[in-house]
Image (tube, rainbow, N blue to C red):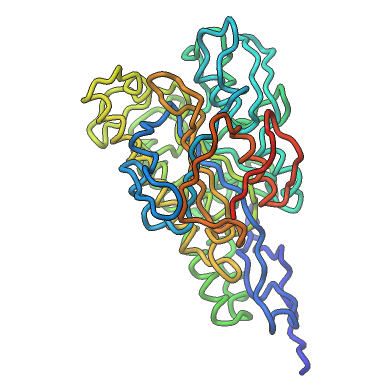
Length: 448
């Protein structure tokens, strides 16, 4: 058999005015002979979704261990993904989160700053912050060299927190859970437009005039590459054509939603009082940010994304589900039944949005499976009981197939004092960024 058809280069892009549009992984990107025998093998990707202010653990932790467990109310929205989910109990941030002598405050600051490293942050309100390189940045250095973005750091709250921090601790400890160096936290981005353009727009030029010209011409990113996209599709097989069409439709949908939000924002508020393109409702904002993450993975623009659903110590209200009180204040419920019910409602609400993200990943083709099949997604936070500020028995759920390296459908309970960093080491190994030590780790945990 002689096969002469050339393969598309893995980094094939569509170029337009101020735009470089990456393509998803296609069968046509495999060498012709290999394509006749097997489908393209995708990379294993890392996703971290961080929950602030603790969890009502009795409504999170299953009663039974092993495969025969039932989901508690907070995680019930994740039922469709139970077969690809590991719930891990008993993991502690022994060194990173717990207070040391003289540290009578700072549980929220330590929870975020130590979450992905297990290293205790320095107590300071000045510029001399000190934490440790976070595991997402370790992964980015090792597996992100081939990508346009080594990593992507996203959040829901405005990324600048001033004057609302815990006494004795710099706001830097709560503005980010990602640390590039022990003294440099990574900035988190909450504006969909900024994220969208980092992924798809203005990547050929840093000249503001280029973007302005495209806006004045009322051309979307897809409009600027439409002819090239149509020519490319004509050269592809039926399966790849379907993938490209679905991908372009998803981009156009997100872009249209961003434009709509920006138009509404311009009508309602002065530009200086609100970041352009941040939706008013938590639901629309969260879905837009999750959609952007799926697109980033789909095009292999990055393989490492960290997303803060909220900031530690944050006082977001949830008016759209009838809760006007600040979330952080509610977590200090002092066992008041009405407040506890509202906390559970908010945490279940978060889980429903996470389920939306998982469904998007599961429905997006990737090689011989879906994006979710080739990912490890960590869902949890650095505090268990928010009322008591505990850093023991943390809320931890892993979801995904990890390219066959993870066996889901189980609740595993570990011995007391098992470091959370043992799990982080295992996750690094799964994505191809093996480390011998991380913070207070004592070894890896088996995920299979």
